Image (tube, rainbow, N blue to C red; front, side, top):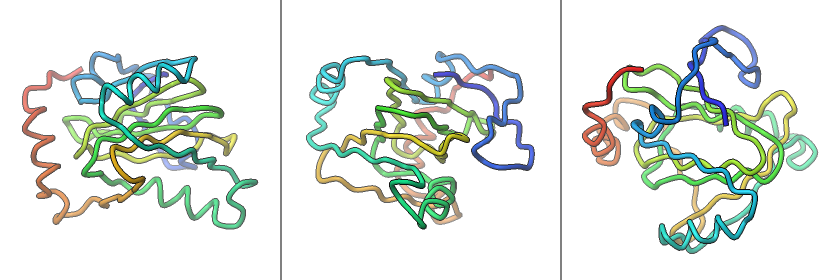
Length: 176
């Protein structure tokens, strides 16, 4: 895992967009974003049990696997959104970027590779894209039946109860 401030320059979302300013794991933690590295899936099983996750699936995001819908799907994953559930992703192969909003509404880019696991809190605005290799295999964990319901950012989502709760728990985040 490597985290840094997104440069906001025009260009393909799959490029690094590296501003050269690092973001430390402690700051991610203050945003509610947790990171682990697990070489053994048994560690993921243990985490899932501790957090009451009962279901999982594996998704491969690549042109070979998704065919003609690949570009459309990658663009849809990159729309800024939140979920009303915590989101856990365990990278089994390949690599990609999760971008999360900071307390100042800037993007923090998090690069994940094989064996990286990320936990995003409910209510955090984020987006996802593959890197320029256009390939990632990720395990998605779910508390109940598998679902993936993105709520795209907008005035009605800004007042969502999960968004409000997230912001209340993050009121005193010091700047990095």
